[in-house]
Image 1 (cartoon, chains in turn yellow, cyan):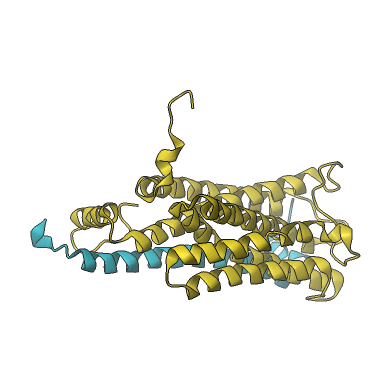
Image 2 (cartoon, helix red, strand yellow):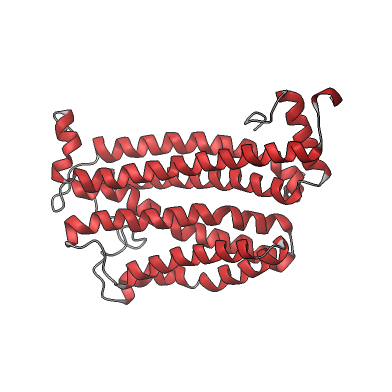
Length: 260
Length: 59
């Protein structure tokens, strides 16, 4: 780096911990703003759909949630793989921090999809390629979390989880291309990189703004969880002890949420 | 988009259950995750404070 900024400085928990706290606050605010803007566009700017009426407005959370479910899995697998390859302890913590938020968005994609399927397809659920592979993604997240929770030695838990996360990553392209590869009830991709969007520009904008909001939210949630994991795993180290002492000093009686 | 009235808006063209069922559950779960994270942090710091053995009089 020519400007002398050292990224590796933040690859250890004690230096990343305070940075993560500041970033989480920034991204939480950005998420709130983007989601509010996305909801405004989704309900007050985007027109009624000619075929589906108002039911289509579920798209503004369904598609962003589905994107996040896949994207977060890939990011999780990336961190897990990095930890496996370089044995860096922060990588495993980041992977663990992403899993519950990824599972949350996977559940929301399935939930909103079900609520959208009933009025438009006439059924809550169908065992087709898109829906089934998304359900498998949810189980992969659960499997990752259960496996990590079952192993007491955290470094070993990271390694075992990383193998599962990396093997499971093959499911992500299967979800994404399932609507092309198989004949399914689910409609094709909403956004196509080779064609112009087939929807009104305002619908597209609402979806993208909402996706940004979910993305910022995920960053904030993962960083807040990573901070908890860092403290849990490294509570005996000097930086963690100093941090807790500092909170007690500032706070007097009990360390609450101050000093974020 | 002009909904005309609040009733029309809430009715969502007859799809109120599906649309609001999606949005409210999403909002609820995102808020719940944030609350759970705040609780996890508070509980953790409470435990760690006990473990570091820091007392008011030592500060």
